[in-house]
Image (cartoon, rainbow over the protein chains, first blue to last red):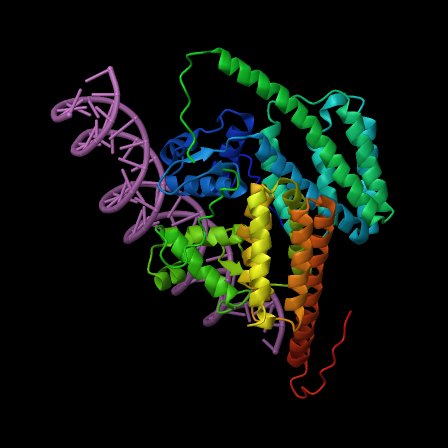
Length: 250
Length: 250
DNA sequence: CTCTGCCATCTTGTAGACAGTTTGGTAGCG
DNA sequence: CGCTACCAAACTGTCTACAAGATGGCAGAG
């Protein structure tokens, strides 16, 4: 009765509401990279693609803007958000702040059944890790763990922010980046530490461990992103007379 | 160039877009209490009141739902959110988590000009406090301070969450509650401590002080809210004798 | 050749109408 | 008297049409 947020934004393809279908379509296109950062989101164009009218598409776009996946100025087309290092840091910093708090709250508020479920989840992950070693972080397994912690925190607002908005932003910036070798085992180990602290009711320890875990995830991703970014920048710079991209508005 | 979030949701009465006008109208009605918690938000009714079509009103309502001021089930009217203690705790906990992080970031990233502005703001508040002693917390002055810190954190996402959503939620739950006697001086003092830590670049100290500050604000509000809530409950429960004004706490 | 002003075109913002669903009450039955 | 089935009213979801504003190119002056 408490964490019954019941986010209705995961209508993969069969949403009763057309706006959900359009939203899922756009989110998938953006996260998968088929809609490049900076791309314009024309309402009529998308409406034609999805096969619905402009109304639901308009609502889907406004939802993307609210989530942070797109930006929009009045009387102008919405555009897919453009990532820079500062924006990436923003996402990880907010996530660290909220999820650390959630871990501490979960340690104090989780029921015994939830603690058992958390323990079982990690046991299952541990035994399944051998199959696909490096696909654990940023995959569904990682998400299951954080989902359980957020639910256990009894904080519906934190749940909504992390599941509704931050999840999409993380999916976008992680898209196209390979999983780091060895990060899987390390992440699972950190998950186990956090879970132990939560199950034992050690709130401050859980908070610290969760903060460290997310910071490690951030640092690992940032290193990879900087490599790719500098490589892309030099490659872009090498093409001397490439057509200059449209200047970004101030 | 960084924190240029430019939230376009403060169209008090003269928004170029009708959706902004409808949104401002509804937000004012909800925060002021003229729209009671649980009240139904009929699109056609509101459209008639504001004098616009259903389209902008629909968009405004969806924005309220995204902010957390209202909830909506499919094919049903949106309703003004109903406050309970757990929801209030959620708001304050998330605010504490994000703004503490923002204070630490501000201590590391603020420019000298921003630090000076922060110092000047508190000096001005300090000299203006004598006029209206108890109106400082939860007023515009308090908000100016937190706004400056959030801007200085260079975290556009934290700024958007706190200014865009949490501000409205706080305004809603604070509505109708008087300012606590003596809280003004205390809050200003805590602001001064936080500002000193930020100006000196002491990130961890700023983080701790901001967390303590927000927790104090939460506790003060919660005490008042519980009084009112138990009073209303007992008054509702025992209509005959309203003499038993026992202030019981958990 | 470069800059300025204008115009065709596209895009968003808004209004109104229609269809499907939920709601609340009412009549009828047990 | 309580319960069920049904029906009308209201509401949201959606579509189409129209109006206002922005974009980008083109012609003409300097």
